[in-house]
Length: 506
Image (cartoon, rainbow, N blue to C red):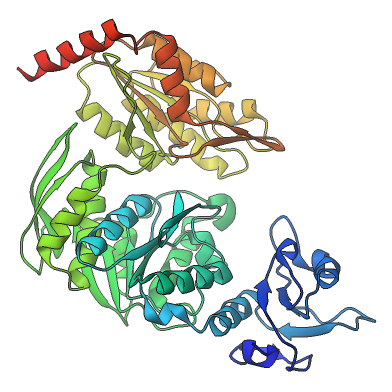
């Protein structure tokens, strides 16, 4: 495609190059540049794309797009724009010939519940005969391949590449988690969403957004529309105070969900067990009877969000029930680890105080014995939520093991002390163990029949970030290894565990 065609729809363009050059690739990472590439120099939090302009040109870039004027004495083609990320999104749309227009785009935003809601919607769409891509915190499912997610929401260029691949694979929709960072950075600029879903808003990412109003303003942008119209359908949690504010926005058809009588999609009756959730939901499309293997009240809210979205998109109620029932589990979301031990072990991604409270309440409802929790707080992230998480853990658990999460470049002891401030507001006994595997080992060694050990914070993650290194670390694998070392996978133990479970059902 000619350079002039690629940038023809870019707004705020200060033309600084001839348009006849042939462009064969777009790139914002100089390491991906090949001969014929158009390179976008994007300033970032840790690195500035302008530092890599020379490298991109040496690798064969035909031109550079930047918000800055060209450096003195530069002979290469230089295109100046007003907004570099908008320019990237608009150029990517032209280069890939707008594959997004052939897909129903569903965007899900909020602090908690995005991932599970996205997984549920992907299953519902599949049950209704519409293959859908899935892009979120855990993975990007594009046709038959799965890509480990680097960011919850990819950059606009990557999104267009994935959309093109989805269209070629026969998909009719894409379900996306939309993070507040992505909205603030306009990674979804120019996309027209068939539906936008709001789950909830609680304290998180204030290291980036500074306060809750800015955090909400970022989420709000999905419902206002970024470079496109407002979403055709806005699905909003009516139980959430921030959701109530979204209801005042004009421009979209709205559908609410929640536990209150005023919600359009609401619960008529529900029951919870270790086997999952059973519920009857009232919707504008009729009753939906749900039987889901997902556990706990927070997952009922995720099911309500997915059901409301599906109803708003006109999907049949029987397909909704079928799709919800077909999702057996979501990696790292209240994921059970069982090698035959006589107590429950659960790994969950809860990494905010609200999410931790919710998962602990769920655990408490399902536990006959003590509730032991292993948790930590991330380094170089919102420091103000650490004591809140400590207090949440101490308020609801019987025994707490405070440990490291992803310290990153921060001193683990500083992080532990911040969380300890909140934990010490409660009377709950606790142990402090900075080394995460050691903390998990101590908790599992302490657990007895009927107890539950909840390992919170990292969920599906398979790594730990320590200073300048990333090491393999998976809470699920560590828990299995320790349980086996404790002898719970032996035939005698397995038989005892099976007999105990059978007796408990009598």
